[in-house]
Length: 319
Image (cartoon, rainbow, N blue to C red; front, side, top):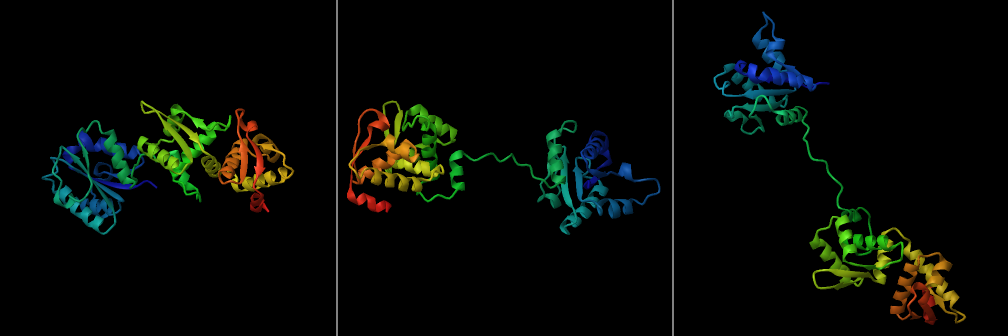
């Protein structure tokens, strides 16, 4: 239903503003009560204006200008509207022309000034927003990608920014199993995540302190970064990968396949378990650091990393 609006004004403002303004309101779907359109010869001014016009309106727009200062009709209408507003029966929107002085009774009301009576598109839209009581806010955009990490509950002890960096490094290096990233790689990750340089450096320092990455800085402000085994494991877990299941499957396979003293390469284990070679290599490195495995490494990637001895107690973790 179209909102009903009573337009209070001085008759002297009709030619330059009021008539055109009322026509624009009606074109915009507003049911405007304007005396020129509503009053007929023989009508009672008091009954029609105060009993019908103002009393039945959802909104009252009071056009104030240099011409309204001496208008008793506008003053009477305004007093009636203020009472209506106090009683919660209508909304009051003052429209100011000519930089007119705002009456004392309206000092606590947000008003709309119009400096040019022939060009006021922006002001008109704000008045429409006021009639419909509809604030206009800019569209809320998507938060930075790294912030969205907080939308899912994790139990990994990582900050959202740190988790984002690990996930991005893993996703970008997934095609070739890469764990090394140069300065340009990391700068692209920072920009894609809309991270400030300060936050980026802070989260990188946090990851390095917790031994999830290894950072090498060089002259000129550049840096290289390498994912460490724990960073690979946490990054995969944050990406939804079942790291716990892989941990048990890979560990059990190592225990069973090395009982006869045979050696197993990381690539062999990955092929037999169906798990990513990058994750197998990370877990093998973690178990090696803990003294559970003896490993030989040589140039040649995953196929050249071989397990040749397993601590007898290692199997207790997978029984």
